[in-house]
Length: 338
Image 1 (cartoon, rainbow, N blue to C red):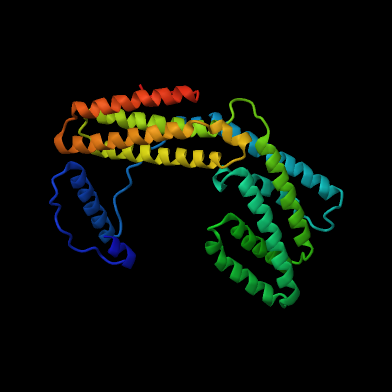
Image 2: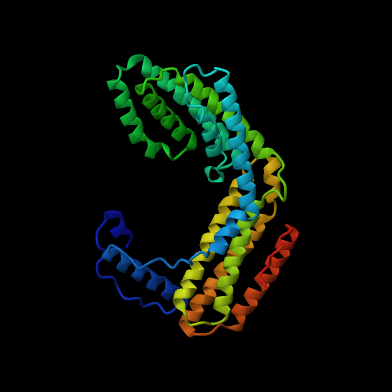
């Protein structure tokens, strides 16, 4: 199957599974299903739980959504106020793109771009380097033909530069400034550097300001979502239901939310101590959740194979639930698996 994926060819006939261990047989079945889906070129719909309007509203209006919304709104408002003050004070000259500053601030405050300080420093360094590179290119390239070629080259480099935020910012800065100069605004380079540095300063300040409520709400919201998904998966397995499609859906949801929680915890741990300390202990909770979900999956495989669970499985699940409740109590979690 791996050779077929690498070479974009059909997997062809595969040997029938011959192993008798339940876990190995489940792995063989999954590989055969994957090979069949790959050979067809399309597979059945993924087993994904549909989110209700209530769950969406809770995600947006919950502690994590409120914290992010407050910081994004604060960054945009501060950026717009500073940009308008500079614009009306004629600091920009004929440059009319005052919206770059608040737009940059809102973009930087996005939590999925990495730790706050890291993303801000990468954006500042990438913008300065990109502006300097563009100034060098603009001094030697013919206009507008050379700038059009520069835009094409930068566009081709964007997918490669996406591996690092600073490199991506450098390439995009050169691209944007080339487009702006083709449009007839050669003085935009210096203004773009100044706007970016101001936006970085705004985001650094807003990112470390105390907010109403509990800090680290986004991380705790992610752990709570993983906790709830694990609870739904565990409850379904313990009921010994014959609905395998529902079990696969719950399994996928449990691992997906757990991966999202792990990513949020890893980003928080890389922050400055003022922010990182609000996520202390959550990595231990996530580790127990991982073991619980893995054990639940092992029980599900055994259930698919024999149609029932053994006392050894239920005892292991009970021990993990007790350990999870203890960990959640240490970090102030208000939800535990029951």
